[in-house]
Length: 281
Image (cartoon, rainbow, N blue to C red; front, top):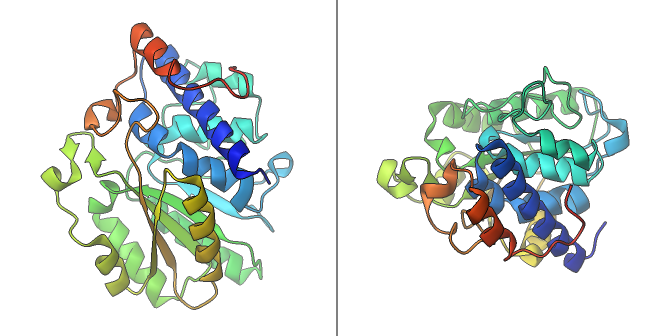
């Protein structure tokens, strides 16, 4: 486990990776990736009980994470590499022909750390529930974690899964919503307002918590509480407030950078705001 300061330093390097990967590919989704860098860094370096050197698809006796909003693959690839699932140097192949690091994660590439193909939004919660039930059937007491976008929960399948998980007491699942209020076509409030998200999930029978996803101390403290809420016959939903483009002043607070890669000039400007802490790939 890393100290809070080391987690912050690692998240800063992850942000540099995200920017360089999307610039190198001239495509990708930097905005949401930057916003979730703190959370995924905390998850993989301090929260998950996992072994990067012993990756298996069934994840027996290990915690499992599913990324449902697969378009933010840059942040996930960076954290997977930095935590030891595959060489950091492989990040340079992002979105290139024959690369294992496709724009949306795929299982056919056999990339360690990836257990489902994601990109078609709305499906990840169903997969996570299935994995959680499998662990229960197998007597495996480790947990399932998943991450979803707030725009993604406009998908109907999410709410079918929400009802199912509560009805079947899937209490070994901690799901998180990245609530940055931005999606590709504008603000979430402009496209389909979500209303009181906490009240919605509570009414569906979930145990609901909230946290600041760009505050490392709050992430660690609240996720510890979330883990304590498991095993109580309710699935757990974490509503995580983040800022799209976090860490780069001209990318923050706008949907513009949802799916636009920085050019060379923008990359240099962005990297000047983020200290190189672990060494670039």
